[in-house]
Amino acid sequence: MIDSQSVKTIYASEERGFDGGKKVKGRKRHIVVDTMGNILGVKVHAANIHDTVAGIEPAMQAYEKYPTIEKFCGDEGYRGTFQIDVFWEMALDVDISARIKPVFEVLPKRWIVERTLAWMNNHRRLSKDYEISIESAEAMIIISNLHTLLRSLA
Image 1 (cartoon, one colour):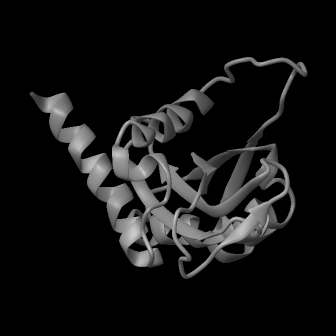
Image 2 (image 1 turned 90 degrees about the horizontal axis):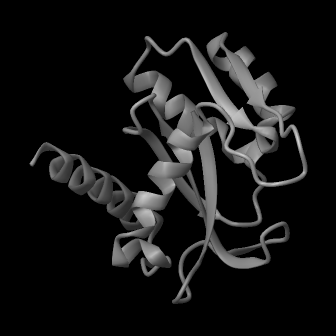
């Protein structure tokens, strides 16, 4: 499953942009997770780049590490260019979860990636994007996921 989250940045960082849909000036985090919520791929970039264009990078990253992936699942923001790119680059399908009603509703299997994004926000360093470089922002996301996994073992 793939999803993104727009977060505000604090400093004048490497890449910043304005996400018009969320009204956030900062960066966008894309994560690819498995069915248990473990992060398989992560990409951080300026918030003004749309999901259909930037989503292919974490998907390719996850597919290179885990070639047994059979299908990707995303929300309506990944319809179009992302589906075509995934089909041409990896010969995989993308299952798009369409919104049934215009009100909040938990979509099947989509809550897993949303839960992982919520767990990331519990870490103080990820509540906003405090990092200056993209690499350190991606590393902090992986470290927070490792911390969450280790806490679940105890």
